[in-house]
Length: 342
Image 1 (cartoon, one colour):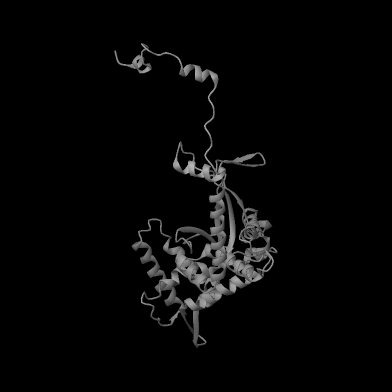
Image 2 (image 1 turned 180 degrees about the horizontal axis):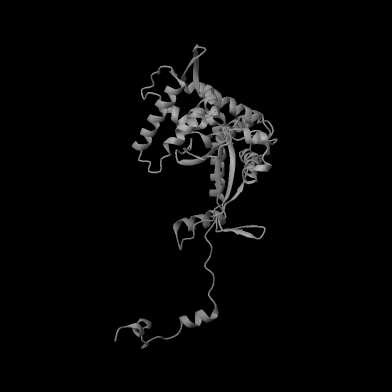
């Protein structure tokens, strides 16, 4: 099996270290826990629908300061270099230059494409269902939609069922669904696009107030490029930050859901400024562009006349050129005769 270079969370490193060590070094807590091997799930990415790899942490006993309890699932990403590269680790050379990373992902994003299939195409409301019935219907319709779209590399069915059985996934339902408690033993759910939109807007507000946005050089550079960092544009800057947060969330949203999120805000004044900046940049580029070089064109003559106020006089030829003009060429063969076919 080829080696891979990866940056792992401390919980995963500790888990793997305990698994590889001698059984005598394993603590009683770890030995008595529900120790199961790490199982990687192959699930559809919420934005593209393409199969991606995810690692659930439900059976991982956390013993470090890093807390993944809110995430519950890690997304495995591969950062590929533009050219062929290798890793040198100590005295070992890893031929594959990709770097694997594991990033926490909200389970609600993974549930979204599955629950969206339970919505009727005509927009009518559906009945409340129990948790098992909702997941069963959503999984079947999602698998059918993948087959209709001709997905030859569709996610594995058992992985979708395993995702729905995770405790963190069941807790995430409250962010996407309306919930009714029929009795202490019976709780029913119904997917609600309006409730999920409200949840997304809360995420946008949280990102706006966090320091993560201020530390992103890419976001700050884009805001400054549009002139939003200038004095007197505080309202436009606030809209620019909101749109930047929406763009960050769009990495985990289907295009239709992302469009709905953008439509819930009024970005008209911001878009007007951005369009004005683009028009100004195009005008400046057209003025700074060099004039087209055309031999004897009327446009060049008009430009030269407008620039100088009058036509320029023809420059005087040199003495050598004047002497050549007076040479008697009578009886001489034309130059083209030397290239005629024999």
